[in-house]
Length: 222
Image (cartoon, rainbow, N blue to C red):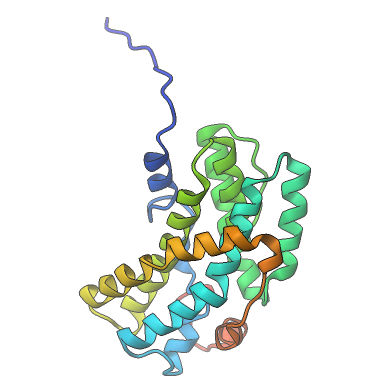
C-alpha cells in the first residue's frame, strides 16, 4: 500500500489571493450589484463608456477608496479586539442599509470559508476588514492584497453590467482592463491617507443603492 505524507509548504501569496478573489470562492458576489441594477434600469448606464465613468468614480471617490483604507487598516491590527473596533467603524461608515448588508454577507462568507480552510482566528467582519485581517495572519503582502481586492470588486460589477445592460464580453473586458490600471493607484493613495482619508462623494451611487430595494423586478440582492 502506498502512503503519502502531507508537506508543509510556505504560503504562496499569488496562489492564495487568486483563490480568495476567484469567482469560485463562495462569497455569492455574483448576486450583488452594488446599486448598479437600479442605475441600469433607469438608463444612467447604457454603454461601456458610461459604465467605465461610473466605476471610475466609485473607485476614486466611493467604495473602492474606503474599502482599500479599511483593508489596509485591518492588516495593521494586532489582535481581535482591535480589528473588531475597526469593523464597528467601518459599519458606521456604510452609507446605506443595502451597502452594509452586502458587505456583511460577503464578509461573513469569506470569514467562514477562510477559517475552515486556513484555520485562522477570524471573526465575521465586513468584507474588506476580514480580508485585511486574514492577509495579516498569513503574512500576505498588503499592497498586493488590496490591489487584487479592488480588481475583483470591479470585475464583479463589470460582470453585472455585461448581463444587465447588456454589454458584449469584449467591451466588458476592455473596461475591466482600463479600470484595473487604477487599482494600484487607489491602494497607494489609501495607504498614504489611512483612516484620516475616509470620505465618500459618490452621491448618485449611494442614492441608487438606497433605492434598489424599491425596484419591482430585481435580479440582484443589492
